[in-house]
Length: 248
Image 1 (tube, rainbow, N blue to C red):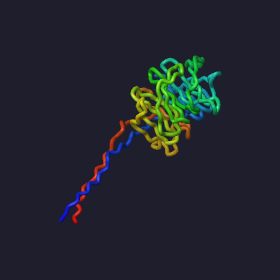
Image 2: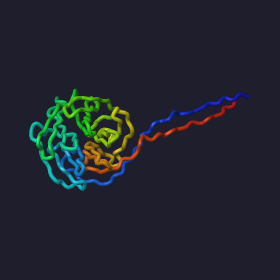
Image 3: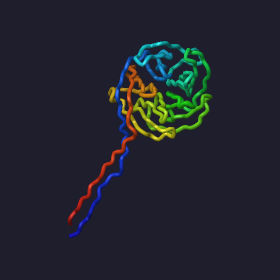
Image 4: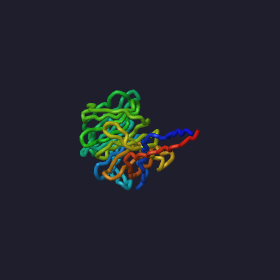
């Protein structure tokens, strides 16, 4: 009698299983809520319909607002706050790669720069030292100085990349087409993904920011803004095989 042992096994599979918990929500004051920033006390929304910055309480009350004068104020997208001033991204024409403008919180123009390379730069965030800018057409995220110098970049795989956030350790970007928030290192390594269809099956996450404790994300499909708790650190799932003894 001969014994043949056939070992069936599967290599460890990395499964990203970040969880999403809804804490609160309110209706956006603008259609196409594309950019969100947090100034330490209030949210700032940059909408794509009125191209206006809205200062909003965490309960959804509009405290103040301003519509940027030229050279900005067309197709408002991503937003960021650097501790002093607001930054807004605008796409002036379909052939323009996108412009980033710096304003005081009262709406006074400070500076601007043009995004690199491809068109459809869409979102951004501030990490305490530099800006991070996302680009839909080239599927690239750029680290940039306030003067617009590219410091680093990395490719991404999720389409429809929108606004971004920074939690002090990792970058997060909204992936509208895939209905995800994606957590990555500053080198582009995916740490976790968070399924936004938990909020709604038709969810299209666009604007995104972090308030020091939780995240705020908008749904472009419903024009709602949600405060959400994201938890998870790239959970590993191991599927172990079995041993069969075949007798011949």
